[in-house]
Length: 383
Ligand SMILES: Cc1cc2nc3c(=O)[nH]c(=O)nc-3n(C[C@H](O)[C@H](O)[C@H](O)COP(=O)(O)O)c2cc1C
Image 1 (spheres, helix red, strand yellow):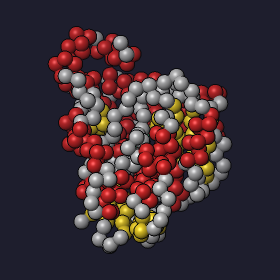
Image 2 (spheres, rainbow, N blue to C red):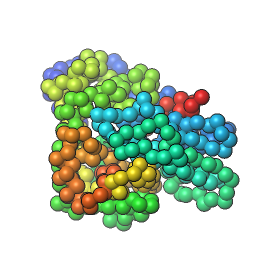
Image 3 (cartoon, helix red, strand yellow):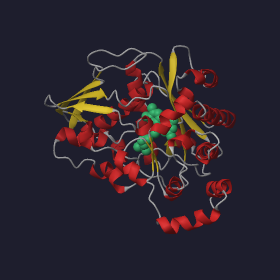
Image 4 (spheres, helix red, strand yellow):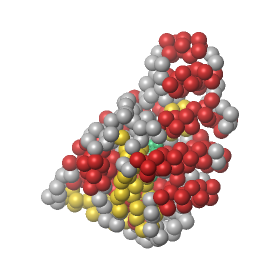
């Protein structure tokens, strides 16, 4: 029996209910089909800009809030805005990660454009950059599209294979050349990509990953922000098609047992709460490689570049059969994280005036991972 399942049964002490439930419920897919329709529809649109957007919305983004809005009113142009209703003020006070998610979107858009014989001229923040503290209603980017003989980037072929892996890795070690290939693929102007497999450094990073996760989960106002966007069970996932999706048979069981109410999810003595932490403890042992992306600490443009670099790294990983997850907690700017973040910055020798924008754990999969939900394309188009 899988460890997590055994531990879970021990905690609630009702093995017979658990044993009977999968038959009663049938095997529940972790992700309902309707929620991942966008992955099947990518590239199917007739309108050229919608076609590009159908790829771009598959980008990674924090908490899967998909905070993108586009204005298509000028021909041959896409104006990208941030949906200011989809921010994470407690977890990501300056909306730095939200902007990184826009960089990921822009990179997939540019790769899709090139694959369709178009050059995407991207002007970041065409009406000026918002300050460091908060985003505003001005556009994040203007994308001007024009036919051009642009080279197709082979990374585009990996868009449907890319994903975030939230499980323990297999024991297989990532070869050094593969790690170097990831670093090379992530090259973007003004982004420094570093990686390590050095055992003492990795052990330290694993410890920090776990501590930072605990700290986030034990900081109620921050944890609540995650709980608020958790979509528990198939019908909720299908209804929202965003947020942190928790699906599959075991989740349906604990939901039916009333163990996933917002109060229970916030309660540190609950099974749900400790299972969340246990999951992370299980990640560390086989995590033997990390990469991190550093830019200038100032400027929203640098955050966009970090996003472009990050998704390129994930695409290259997909090409190599490698999986990745960015445990971002230690990089976050809420006050309770300050001391641990300072320790991390010292560990990676982050120079003054710079910011580590992404930290990525890297390994080989030990199981399959469901695709993440996406809202329908039309919900991103501003009318
Ligand atoms: C800036 C940023 C921060 C992220 N932080 C985390 C994180 O801390 N933990 C995690 O499991 N995934 C993290 N992710 C991954 C997102 O949760 C993921 O991209 C989103 O849920 C969509 O899933 P997908 O990447 O599989 O399409 C982050 C992604 C971005 C762009």
